Length: 239
Picture 1 (cartoon, rainbow, N blue to C red):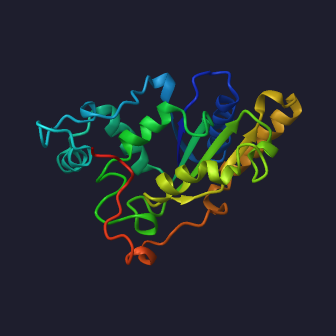
Picture 2 (picture 1 turned 30 degrees about the horizontal axis):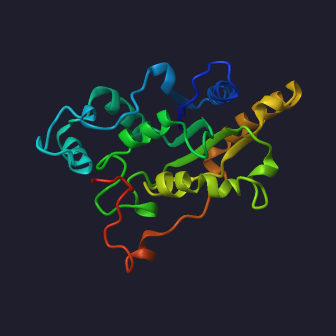
């Protein structure tokens, strides 16, 4: 199995970093291939605009999807983006490793999605969900949250974690075709004892080793929505 881990935490001694290290160690020990993009260490630029492209379709107005289509057809993505797109095409499974900040991804990870999940590379041509460009691959979110688990339930102050992750699971990963594995969630990692920390890291390694057969979340089937949406597109504003 070829696993691509996109790591989005700025602190090398964070629990997110510990999860990534434990995951890589477990996968490599079992003979799997692993590539990690440590976005902060790479200095990844999260801003998506003309800096994405070495080609120009329309110099008078930036229409993001138009430029992405043109770049996809003419090899026009800048090397830093092309490298990430190549990793995405290479992998059998994608793991997004990040903390929940303000009920969503850190900005650097959202910027990675904005720039790497381009028309022609991650979606487009009427292909979405089960017929998506990345269908046949798996994806999983591995996340930490600052609060305890009861805070992320229907009765909790933040609501159910399934609701928090819905835009990522369905609007991003599921949309482009990934089979989305149930997330690995660590609640309040700063408050857990050393023994529980070690147990969590071991469980995470086991979860990654079972990625190929892990339960997945239900997603729409493209054919069920033809009567409602003719040409679905990713939620990228053009104006």
